[in-house]
Amino acid sequence: MHGSSDVPALRRGLSILTALAGHTDPVSAATLARELELPRSTTYHLLAELTDAGFVVRLPAERRYALGVAAFELGSAYLRNDPLERLAGPLLRNLADRVGHTAHLGVLHGGELLYLVKERPSWPQAPTKQQPSWPSADPSTRPPTLVTEVGVRLPAHLTASGRAMLAQLPAAQVRACFPAGFPRRTARGPRSLPELRRMLTAERELGWAVEDGHVTADFASVAGAVSGAQRWPAAAISVTFRHVCEESAAACGRTWPELAAEVRRTAEELSEQVHGHR
Image (tube, rainbow, N blue to C red; front, side, top):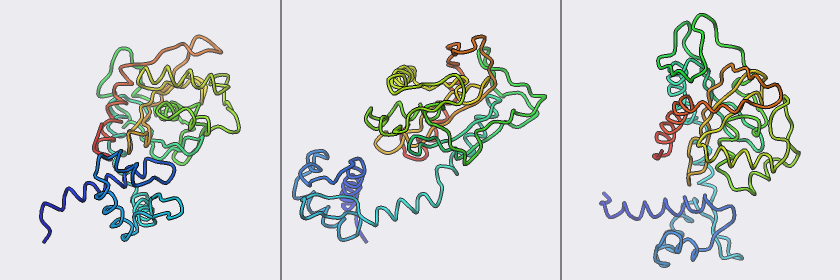
């Protein structure tokens, strides 16, 4: 039976896999040793063990290392089990009932947002926690029909969920997501990369993203990102509600901070359940 002395080695091996996953290109052993503050001899030993197990592949010509097939198979098994969706379901149902509006879970797929989970509030009933500045929900009617069904893809730059995640990505990656330009569904929404970058900067400082009539006229959303590995966005949670601006072409500038606080709290809970950090 292995003793507790094996635990540090396991943790170091996992740290190497995590570091490799955080790089887009193969990495040298010296770089890994420096980043993880490990002795080079220890780093080479761990890389050899991980290579034998198939989790790491060595590229002799480049003298670098990358993730191996076993790591891919492990990631594929994770996706098959759908833990993100399974964990998000109860949290979204609770959020929808608290605020009285439809809640979504979405992920980035290139320049598009893919909706994975959609939960409507339990009707007929009033929200369990209503703030004066929240958009009102009428408990006597059914929730409105929205285009944001499970499996639907929308341009990420138009959705609050998409921009909540884009705001956490490097500028070069954001640019690479939109090689074909910036289509719009209504009269609102960013029309160019500089305009999108200004919106992402403002929403990053705000702490959440707001979409007001960008996807469907007279509807708005607020969203918060779910942190993934290396603190990169793994998904986003949003709430969508009916909102009619007095202005016709420009949004009215409302940000719904109390409602956003509920959305962010749910996103943090999901981050903690999936990745162990908020």
